[in-house]
Image (cartoon, one colour):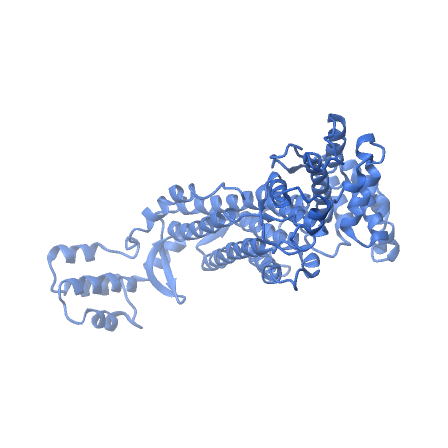
Length: 541
């Protein structure tokens, strides 16, 4: 993911002609624009060093630009990028880069390394790391709070030498702390008894937790609320159902929308219940090195205290890596949410095609390059397509991540770098659906006209009442009347008048129309707010 909200107005990129974008020199000179990134004011952490604090999150500081400046600068920056999430769709998903970009990963690694050093200073048996003064703690805290893009670039420079991303973070911290009198005496306790995955698994856990809580779940809630509004606002508007694409017993438009809101709400609730897990047990999960260095320390207890202090649930049974089972559950939950949304997108697409919804047009927009009349349902098509792209990535993550050879192989490392891609396409899908919903206008005339042409749907209640009163072969008689035949109001009324059933039952059937034969659909739709209000708003634990 790219850096969000970047102002390139004064950078060298803005002076490069478009026909030079494909040249190698364009990419080799990109580093010269880093200073302009810094003028943005990079995201920072607010994190307490207290042992039980779990209040760890980004607070973005953004330099505001005019819309015209922002659009032009974004074009120069985004056009050469490989991934459309960082390019074409950057403005729609940029909030995720605060939590799932390479920059974010490095920042969370820095955070975990620093918090571990602080934890060591609180263990009495580890006398070589005495309690830090307020000044020393403040110095360490500032390394987190003020960590910016230039710092991340410095880490990447170190990595070019080490060819190891986590070791580069350790060396970066040692360099930065050489000038601090207290910390300089304990530099070798950065990354003490840690394997890289002790740092990485917690960094990824924090990235995922904050990305979900701060970006994904709130947009899910907006989407569910928008569909709820569709449901309650149209609770009593009758609509012809379709099973196998053919006319079926009527429903209401609101009730059909309520089904999707309820399904999405349930899955969103399941998502919020999934525990984010972390480990901190060393090279193969047994605290081998820890116990050799400090045999009197209860390292499993220390590890649990440390992991939970970050707001992560502790996994005590691990190899070198946390097993990623929770990630598999979490990604599968998002996949199901996306599949439900795809079902919604396709139904809305169909209702628009049938004329049941109109779309609000925007001046200047074009639906087709050759057919001027077109107003296409592109938002729902985009939502469906991006749900598919998201699920392709998340499905692979879900199936691959729980599998690792023996005590660990490296395949999870490269795969996890795509976590933001799966979430990014999901976010794009949700926002596309929201944009489409905002354009919808119900075309009641179309719904009424279709019902007026569908009197055959009353065959079901008529044959059901006939069964109650013992009329022989009710189904067969209605089949003969309606199947493959043109059915009108008059032909239905004539059939009812000829039935040998009680007067009150006959009156009920004569008063029935395709518009009123909707059962409890309206009541179900109107009850939706009570149901979904109990589901949404929960955060990842």
